[in-house]
Image 1 (cartoon, rainbow, N blue to C red):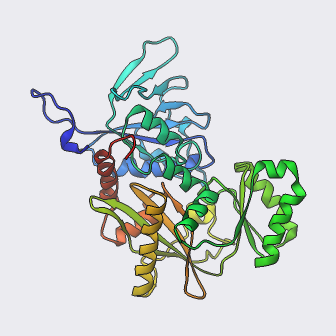
Image 2: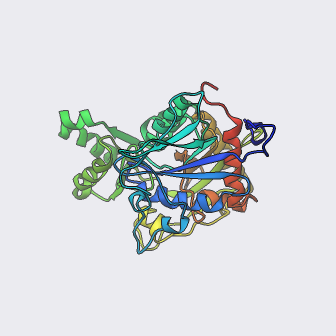
Image 3: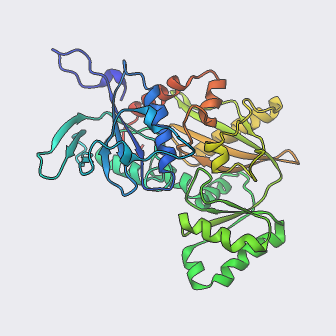
Length: 385
C-alpha cells in the first residue's frame, strides 16, 4: 500500500495518510521509548501525514496524549512518563479488532465512545518487552493495520538474545561465548545454574557480562570482574527478566551498522564505532542516554573492514527475517574478525542515537529516515508475506 493508494472520495481532495505513533509501554525502557517518540513526532512531515500520538502507560493502559515533543525529553537526568502527558486519567484508546476496519475508538467511563478516525499505519517506537518483542506486532497483524518495522517472528528473535544467537549461528554468523540461565533452572538448582556461569569464566576468563535475556538499552546489565560481584549481578538482571544471559568479554572494538529497507531490499549504512566511555565501565544506559557518550561516525575502518561489516549487518537482517530497520552491533576482535553481539529491531531513535547518526552520515537525514520507514510500512500488507 502506498500513499497514492489510500481510499478517496471523488468529491474530496486526497487525504493524508494517518500515522499513529505508539510509545511508552510496560517495559523498563518506557522512558527511552518516550524520548524516541518525541524525536519522531518532531520529525514527521505534517504536510504529508496526519499524526495521532498514543501512549501506553507502565500499567498497560492505552491513552491519548498531548502532541508535545518538548515534554518527551530527558530532564534533570530523568526520563519522561506517559502518565504525565495523558489527556485523561481514565480514558482509553482501543484499536480495531476487525481487519475490515482501521477506526480507532476512544472511551471514558460513563461516556459514549468516540471514533477517532482511521489509522493507516502505526509507528511503534516501543523498546523492550510488550512492544518490541512481537506482542504488539501480533496485535497489529490481527487488526490488519500496517506498521513500521519487523514482524512477529523477527521482533521476537530480535528481543530474545538467546534465540537471536541461535539463529545467527545457524546462518553461519559468528557469536561470542555465552550461557543462558532459564528461570526453571534457577528455581530447581541455584548452585548448578551458578556453576554454568563459573565454568564460562573458567574457560574464557573474567570479566563476564550478566544481562537480562530480553531487554535492551543496556538496562539491567552488570560487568562482573570476579566471583564477589556475581550474585548481585544475577539479581539485578533477574529484576528485569527471569531468564538471564551471561557473556564472556570480547577484546576488541565495538562497531555498529544500520540496515534500512529500500524499495529494492535492505542496505547498510556507514558503520560507527563506540569508543570506551571515560566515566563508565562500559557503554551502559547512562553512557548512552544520560551522558550521551558520542560515537565515531563513520568508524575508522579500512575499506575492506567497512564492506565486511556492512555485508554481515545485511546478512543478520536477512537471517532473522527483519523488515524496515535494524541496528546490528559487532565486536571487531584483536585478530581482525567481526563477531556479532546483537541486533535491535527498534533501536534507539533519537537524533543523537547511533542509528540515525549512521544514516545521516550515509546521506539520509532524520526526517527522510522517518519518512522512508513510514513509506516502507505503507507498501507492505499485514499477514503472511
